[in-house]
Image (cartoon, rainbow, N blue to C red; front, top):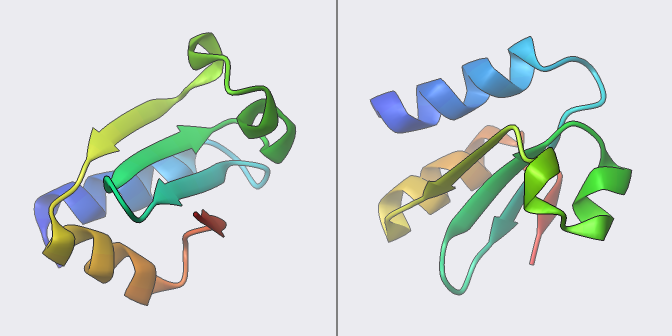
Length: 71
């Protein structure tokens, strides 16, 4: 597992049980939100973390099963 994916998964785990991981497959934009509701408002002030992933990183993250929403 790459360091970036480990960082994302650790941050999700540390952010609590309601943390919501969103991934846009087209541009591989990955955002960690405090809750699903926060993701629907898409107010960047609520973001816990944001990453731009390579195709391989996006696939690796998807394979972990930790992505809550894949668009």
